[in-house]
Image (cartoon, rainbow, N blue to C red):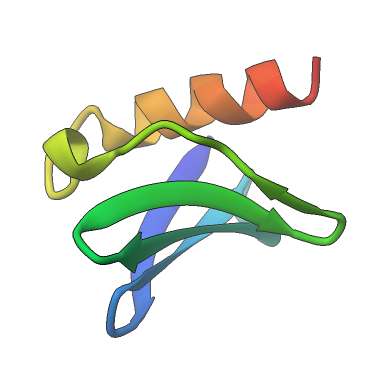
Length: 69
């Protein structure tokens, strides 16, 4: 289960299965991108159309699953 919450201005944190993760969503000049802090990995998809929408957690969950291969 993915939970996304605001952790700073222009930064969202991602919990996986009830635990904090290394995944974050950052707003850089209006582009919201999912990235992992350790090891660093930035995914190119702009999540701006999904910010503040119910399906954001599902989309992020699928993106993390695909990034883990």
